[in-house]
Length: 112
Image 1 (cartoon, rainbow, N blue to C red):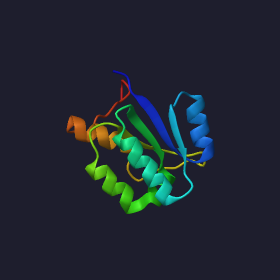
Image 2 (image 1 turned 135 degrees about the horizontal axis):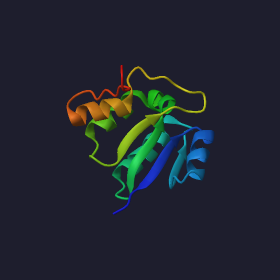
Image 3 (image 1 turned 180 degrees about the vertical axis):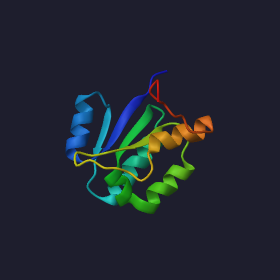
Image 4 (image 1 turned 60 degrees about the horizontal axis):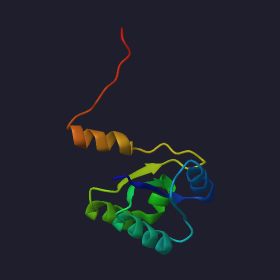
């Protein structure tokens, strides 16, 4: 079974991701509209990955965090930087791997 990719963010991010192959996109305008679309994506059986810009996740605030606590295993939700860049306090992908593996994976160059 194959899954589709959904993207939520600013117009430039969603357009770029659509050109790269994302099937579903939503340009964030209002908090309520975006929460509704996110909930639609989360309950879809077709979507396996939702890419959401950090800035949108921050604007959605508590409601976004609550949805993440109660969601199913799939789709996976990853926060990504938008066109202005973003350095999160916690790397979401690293945190998912740490929770799944049960520890930190450290990659070192040989000889160091």
